[in-house]
Image 1 (cartoon, one colour):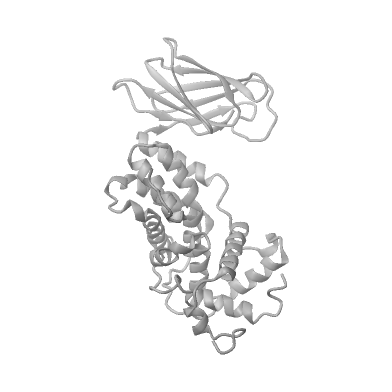
Image 2 (cartoon, chains in turn orange, yellow; image 1 turned 60 degrees about the vertical axis):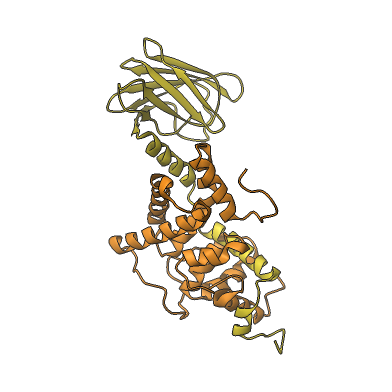
Length: 196
Length: 167
């Protein structure tokens, strides 16, 4: 047993338990870990402006890097962060090499118009989701990259996930931080929000 | 907060995450899942890659497929035959419908040798040895994605892994 007691189960704690089981010789755990964590890594890579094909390569590379260095990872408890950092760095490296997208550090918070390759909102089923998406798309690229990854994590892990993304301390968790606050402000100021 | 309906951005940023935020983030995840989903099969491809890595194995090539082997969703009622080749081994696999959603898998490895054969399906992994002619059988296998791992015994060669096929 790796998780005993009233500790809240989060994505990070479940990932840590599976990784420890894998290191202790349970080969099947790695498959479970891949299934559990790949979605958040996918959104990490996509948030770094990689196209879908490159994002797929980057996520695969992160997992290979994990099994290759499994024995030398000093803090199995932080395996989720390890994977996110690895994905972000690999994404950054690939972006620079491939020159398929323009690398850029997230330095300022200016509002950018939605990029051309932004997903097509037609697939959203509910009107409320379309509406929320419009507000998300108005956020800075940096904030979008943060929130799309945070959305796949659990509240107790927000601060450590944000840190793994290279965001400054206080970006999110335990307080809202500016990105989530900005989204809430937009929603608060939207008379149509709350009806959906 | 002087006006709780219109707190400033700073007040909002310094405030604790509440249930509404949780709801917004849950819906945000659902939106990204719908707009930019994880590619179908990516998790399987990653696990396949990790298997190869763990075995230091060679990937066999799907040489020839009959009756739409490897293609999902078509009603396959007849025997299907698939051949995999690698630098050291050629493996022919025949899949015969048994009862309901079960099949029988007959294999033939050339050149024959002492080779252990593993069948990896979604729910189970089974193991057998090929006989002196290089033949092996798995009975009563559930339909679905399956892949084979061939391990020459002793130092007779590298393990070979086939791509996953629909049986």
